[in-house]
Image (cartoon, rainbow, N blue to C red; front, top):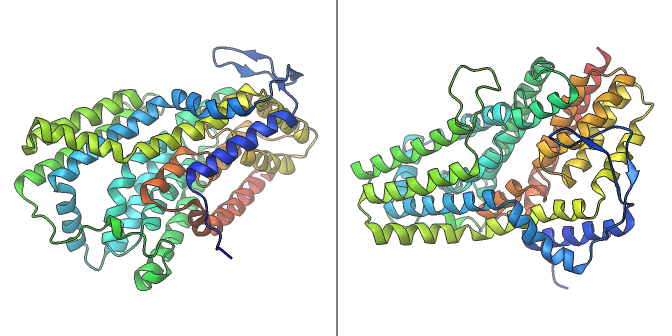
Length: 460
């Protein structure tokens, strides 16, 4: 009897597409009345709508529509791949990794808390999530060369940023939008979210470090044992010459520019110029930077172009995954079942007491976040309905926002509908089932911690 093998990310996502399409035949179609520029649904206005069940043709076309909807993210991934292709051609990354391992000899474990706190601060301040895609191909070879595995590197990025996103203190794209629809300021509830940030990030760092210590001591216990050799560079690492140092300095500068450019300083109250860049501008940054680094290093026009195209080709599979995962939302919206699912939640929450209400809101957002992985989109759809309901239950609106943010961030760490999760695993060639085996205990810990904090906050 053949041993069961977990299907690839593509197959998992296609099965989800089929399941969602089937759901459009079973779940009644419906819609809310909408108002304002953001087309926010109005509580109490849900009404049945004309059914539009999705068939075989819709399932086939949904990934293409999803790809069109997410083309900015997909192009960004390809530009990052091209940029990294040029950097790998220079040998600067290999030389830099070898130098880092040499300098940290015996202290490689320090990389984990330092990087996780960095990603956590990005996650809590400006919702750093999709932007982390650029770091997977950079950090996976570093951690493998240091004696860990691809799972450790992926966990540092996903759990570091994910814990920060869960406790989004001033994240304008999720907490900010949700606060606006709830009619509260971004500062309300920030004390509680700062506490959650410390607790969640601490738990995540402890969890990853415990796994990393075990893998360092017993490599055969790695969840990707025998699969990470491809990330190791064979032979003697190249020397860290002056040209390679210059290439690495430009490399670091590109990532610093990226981080600065996406932070909305004006919305979080900091007196710094806001660039307001997003994926088109970031794609241009990586394109120009890749060309510049190739020419500065002396690769020449033809060699630079070949390296860039080759690097982009390496990530075409990740771009496909992003399009397929976005197709799930396309089917839900075209099948007119998104508002129906939200309406069921509205009915389930009516009449609950304050503690029960906030816990039910948190639990409701867990499946909603799977179906609608965009935190800003989920906030737009649901907060105008759930925040007013919370008033009748005696629950502060800011606590509803916090429950939404925590649930959305928690689900994003594991859901196969999140392009970052599936894309990161594709970078590291880590099967989805192995990621679940690694992370499920921490997810349970974070779920219980969140429920406890929310319940106590509802009482006091």
